[in-house]
Length: 468
Image (cartoon, helix red, strand yellow):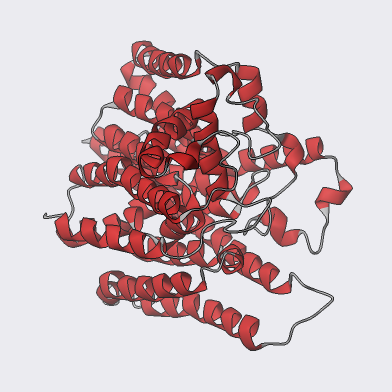
């Protein structure tokens, strides 16, 4: 398949979103994620490595793993080439000149071209599916509205960590597990939130070791430990881990479409229990939610089972994890997008809710137009490439799309034209997060149902083969 046109269209969408405001634009003195990323560049350029995680942590201190710090250091050279003043230590705080803004936006696109898009194309090259299905999967993985709005609107570099994860799964599909473990280790060391995927991948490898032996596990372990040690060699692990996992930040961040935020209006758990207790509660609930799927991928360690279990684990971690942010919906979005060839309707509906779940954030950052434009384009793409073709085999597909878009449209109508309740200033945000959380919980249950059905078919097939 010729990928030139889809890639060009993907880059055009990224560029279009980048024309609108970024997180914290002109918001002195706090700013937002754009300033955080720029500040990390000036710190890594202006301070020795020993001070990267300790320098002025009260002002957007580094709180991502070391590979992300090295990424900031490398990217700073691109920004400096365009506008040297943008990465001068101290003097550049809150720097927002046009040249540096354009360079920062371009750097996100460049990293997507270097990591995410090649990883997606590599993954698709390993799938024996039609060109139309490859195109649909490419769109869900590389051009989903939620991903574009977070990275190219809000401003982050999630495409790097997610691209490394996609490349890791492409390696697993190709039976190159050692390479996959190396790439996934890079992903975790770029953004530690990809630890959401660890339970599924660990149980998959343990299941594979039953037939491949302890040598297989030893190779994977040495790869992971060796890669991690090389990346962390120049850092104080206690300091970095303390920045990466600050338990004192609270149960959830802002208005996020997970269980804890959705039940908060009725049950104020964050006021009832200590943060340490809530941290343990979240861990226990998440563990219970992922264990059945982990057992399945351990028992049936196949790539097709792994995709479903990774989707389940990442979505469960989002719904039940501690101090989750709305942007972390990207973590289940990618593996569920990988399932689009087998679960086209489910992947389509999830991608719609993933985008709408962030509407309170996007509205606050003045991304209403880009959100609406991408959402309309996305709905049309979903109908043209997924729903219309599924109506013959799945007559309920159109009803499912209508059932997804209708409540979203109604909430927009209520928010824009409905009365404002002065005593409930967060009412509309709570409505968005609660609706999206309910949809995500239903999707999680459907994923589990499909997983059990798939494993039962595998078991029946293997049983009949043994009898023969």
